[in-house]
Each structure stands twice: as structure tokens, then as C-alpha cells.
Image 1: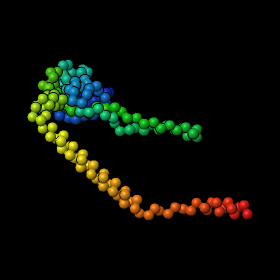
Image 2: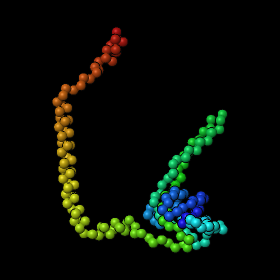
Image 3: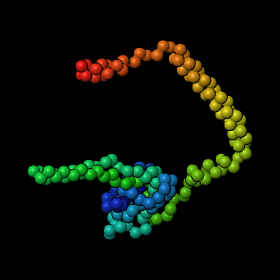
Length: 183
């Protein structure tokens, strides 16, 4: 089943599983929201249901994937022979949505467990916490290994000190010019 929805002053034809980019909508990534106004519903092999202007009780549900900004649009104004030039940039706020369900009756789809809830369930397990303690010890070992190359670098600096210093330019040249000017 497909639907034609209106959001942000634009119309989109959507099917369950589509990923679309629309103007900014409120919601955090992972939230399920009801999208826009449903203007038409249709199925393969059947006549579409048109709204006047909207289809009653129909709803489209989508999951917010991310909140982002569109590419920059440059606005350049110029009035010739008046030395007037203005350059402005604009990035439109947008929301990326994944269509979860197109519902002709307006019933919400069954919600899948959120990622945050799944992480909390994993944190409650005690064997994973025990596994973390040896991991910290290995980090301490890697820190001591990381310090060894630093000591080698200091040895290289000592080798550089043994070499003869580079010659400096003579500082007497400007003074010689001054002596010549006095004579």
C-alpha cells in the first residue's frame, strides 16, 4: 500500500520501508512519529482513495533516523555600476525519515524495543561486568608499553646534542657597514 502525504509544504509518495528527507520535524533519532497529512491512499490493482482534501482516519508512521542540514545554498545579490554586492549562505534544517507503516485506519504499528532499552538490558548482566575488570588491566599494560617509545625518543634527543651545532651567520656585517659610514 502507498500513500501521498503532505509535510513542509511538499507532497511525497511513500511506501512502507522508504527513506525520505523532509523539512525539519520535531523528534529525536529513534522516535516514531505520525507524518503529515494523508492526501491519497492506493494499492496495486485497486482504485486509489482520494481525500477531500485529506483521507479520514488514515495515518503514516515513520521513524526518525537523523536530524541534519541540507547542502549550502548561496544567495548572491548585485546591482551593477553601484558597487553593491552581498553574499549570503543558507543551510535548511531537515529530517531523515524511514517509513514504518501506511495505515488506512490510523492504528499505530507495534513498537519495536528501542536501542536504549536494549543497552540497559545488556548492562544488567553480571558476567559482562566481570569481563570488564581484566580489560582494564590490559589497558594499564598498554599504557606502560606506550611510555617505552617516549623514553627512546629522549635518547634520540641526546644523540642530537652530541652533534656539532650548526654555524650561525656572522653578526659583525651590519657593524662593519656602520664603521665604513663613519670613515
